[in-house]
Length: 170
Ligand code: HEC
Ligand code: HEC
Image 1 (cartoon, rainbow, N blue to C red):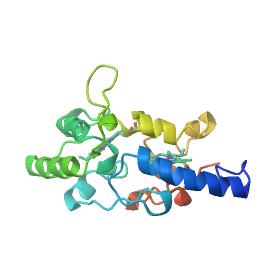
Image 2 (cartoon, rainbow, N blue to C red):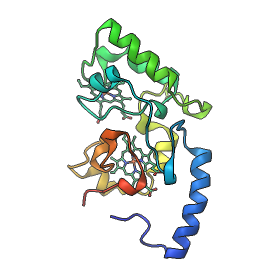
Image 3 (tube, protein in one colour):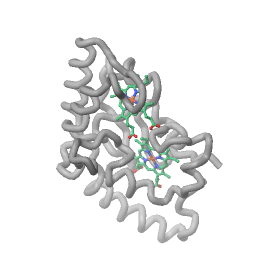
């Protein structure tokens, strides 16, 4: 489904130009943003191996360093599962994630209980960026969870979240 079908081509172009500026200002990514989309360039072999078995390896630039530290210190109780890695891998992955984390203050958001935000999908920018996705689509069995990026971002595994590579399940 194309998101912007309700606006005319001209408006759409104008909107795109405006959005290009808006994205530059509002998205937390330190990564390259060719034609308005996120393409993650920062990578690390250990992170790629250990953090992509249950879901796509989430880009480091989508959470703050504080959040990554908290995620990595809680891997034994990781969203209802045990995602522990050995000490050397933990050290390497934590350093990689912290180095490439979002630098923006507003992504260092605290969750309701005052602890660092653990979920990308609960950050303000994620909610704003996805506010056009209807409840029906979120509940689609092919999606199941907002954390299932690859259900819509067809190249998420390659770190490509460009809007042109989105294909929403019907
Ligand atoms: C149900 C489908 C769906 C899921 C699941 C989903 N997204 Fe999206 N995503 C979208 C849509 C739709 C947009 C808006 C595209 C637009 O603005 O045209 C979007 C936009 C984005 C953008 C901005 C893209 C751009 O070109 O500026 C990023 C980055 C992004 N999503 C990351 C993620 C991440 C990370 C996850 C998983 C944690 C995720 N998304 C899960 C549908 C989805
Ligand atoms: C054993 C499986 C498993 C492994 C390995 C794993 N995770 Fe997860 N992870 C999960 C599950 C399950 C969720 C919750 C998914 C959902 O809510 O749909 C999750 C969610 C997350 C989220 C939050 C997604 C959101 O909602 O924004 C982050 C961040 C995350 N994982 C980071 C990591 C990192 C970093 C690693 C590597 C050190 C890792 N995960 C390895 C199972 C795993």
